[in-house]
Image (cartoon, rainbow, N blue to C red; front, top):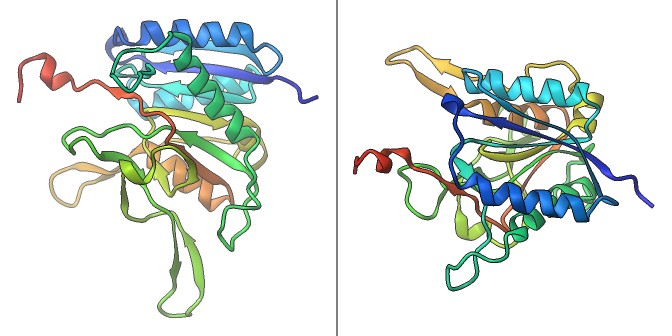
Length: 254
């Protein structure tokens, strides 16, 4: 019998607040943790009011590793999951907890030897749910596909995590390897980190100052690239899609 997964939970809480949608999600997750003690042990949980987001995420990972967690679940203050039926009405509150714990448990048991890629992997480093990006419509999500690229000079193939943006309909209903995934709702395999990437930073915002300053690569894509560079695998669980609050609408902006 497998030992229960020692789970950590970290919440980057922007402006010391969480969206009210978190309430039902935590009730559901708490209910499922209470009824799944043979599979999960809640080892650690904390909110982090830290700026910027890369520092918050690194602190969550560091503290969860110190607490001897196997996995840490991280969900942003403006993101939450609530299961809904086909009619759009919310299901039993526990269903959100089922989806989140299933995502983590399936990633922990994922068969990295049968991905369909010729490259071998040393384990799953991260899994996340697809979250809709802002200003990209109902089908735009922060997920990049995964390709094998060829070096133009040597002709050798190499594994490339940087690829095309994926649409939601290509992700729904399945767990699959991806190149990059946004960090709004993710779980990180701390056992894998201890073995292959023990010293941070694991998240780092990269900026482009060549013209008007902008983010050249977000901290979430940084960790995905780092996992692939070290032989690990990133997964997307398209069996549920968390809500992502668009705060511009809360202040009347179109």
